Image 1 (cartoon, rainbow, N blue to C red):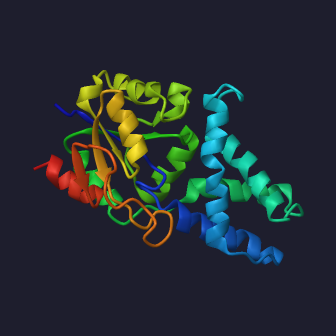
Image 2 (image 1 turned 90 degrees about the horizontal axis):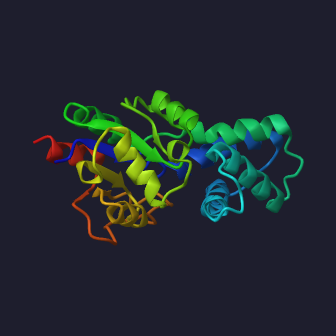
Length: 232
């Protein structure tokens, strides 16, 4: 019954923490700034859900994730006492989210899945961000779906159902793939099939989800493993 696979991106397909830590160090250390770069990445990411909740609650109008990331970056730089960081540097650093590196299994797994299924990201990231990650990492999508298309952020049901509808499919014909149980629980509640991908090091060594915390249709250790099962 599955005709399309849609994917969470941050953490599931790309290693946001290591990538942001590396980018922040490369951009800020020439300014004589020395930090715990992993902690800086965590602090920036910790602003992610609260910022989206401002949109989900209606306290903020819908904004692209790039806009929220920049708002969050300004907050974090202030908290670190780094108000001296200039505008051009802030803009460059904010676009680090467009330059995240994929986990090593992803490109080959997506290429195998695409032989049988249509594929799209279903991310809170905006379209230009998703395109940047695709071009950097060799992801080949049939469409770019998610928050900017639905004009809402996950886990709101419309994000998942609008992704299925974009391919003229029912939710039951659409598989949501993610490394986060909360994302998969919301997708399942919206009627989608679900696949959990373990990313045990997403939030630092041993700090990611190793097993699903919600019932799923598939539980795998990599996108390539999922492809081998679905394309058998």
